[in-house]
Length: 100
Image 1 (tube, rainbow, N blue to C red):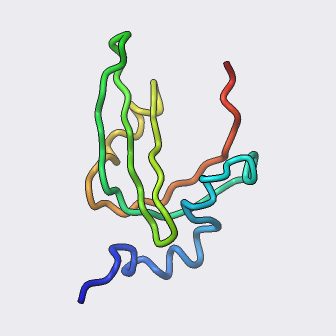
Image 2: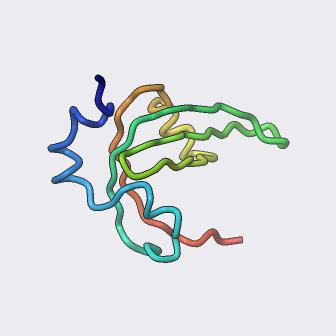
């Protein structure tokens, strides 16, 4: 019987995380809040847009859900080193409305 990959980080997720990925299913409820959650990288995608700019999709999973993060521009360049299958990551951020 095997456990979840995050089992080794239960102490960290208990004391350093204030949310889980399922809260992102209803982003309007957490808009403007500082969020910290842990997850395991289950898939990564490195792509190029129609205009020739690189971007990436990072797929994370925790005990309560899964979520895909799309990173563009300097965010992608700065964080693409973390796009590694099986890595356990702590993600810190804030939900903001996209300005068009």
